[in-house]
Length: 257
Ligand code: SAH
Image 1 (cartoon, rainbow, N blue to C red):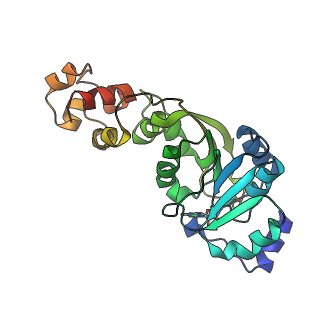
Image 2: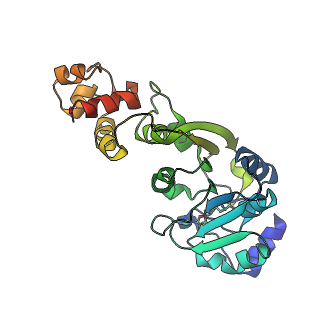
Image 3: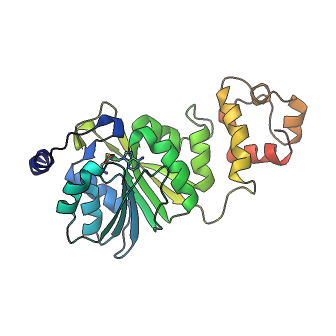
């Protein structure tokens, strides 16, 4: 870590919080993330936000070919130096806008401030596995099950694409500088087939509306007559957090919303 500190200061880098720059430096956390990713030699791994390249190097050591996408060009010198001779392709650009390179898996310590929109882009890519760090509270919302007060648009969006697991908690001290928030690693194993036969862009308008009014009953939240909800096979008195992806799909299929 002190070596890394020296490298950063030699390149005149000061970490920028507005880019979510908290580098994962703890070797045991890095190793566990790579283990969770079940890397096979030669696999192409998409890493968004390599920063100084710590996770990148750990992925390379496991035999991955890393496709890294980084927004902040100030990392150029550090990355050229640290990744010399490694099997890495680096693309400069904003992961929210740039074309993302094809890959088998995503492994990343994502910039937390844009983690949601980035998931919105990478989950539809249907990679084989996703392993990424998130703020703990966001990770808990990501993996929440039906009935949990944290169940909502995020857990439903993720459930559409795969099975999510909160695999590991990571203490603030594993990062440089330590963030104010706690962190966790979420792993998503994509479904082999979509769990419902309603397209994602037809499902999410109703889901978003329902959870804007999460304390109301589903009928009131959607402003729909209870009989119509019941006719779709859903109890109109339930709060949105009690509804599964299948329930929302039933509402859309019945033309309720
Ligand atoms: N993965 C590294 C760094 C994590 S910090 C590590 O674990 O050490 C988050 C990184 O994401 C920073 O390097 C930041 O510059 C980069 N970043 C932030 N927003 C981004 C965006 N929209 N697209 C690509 N990279 C981004």
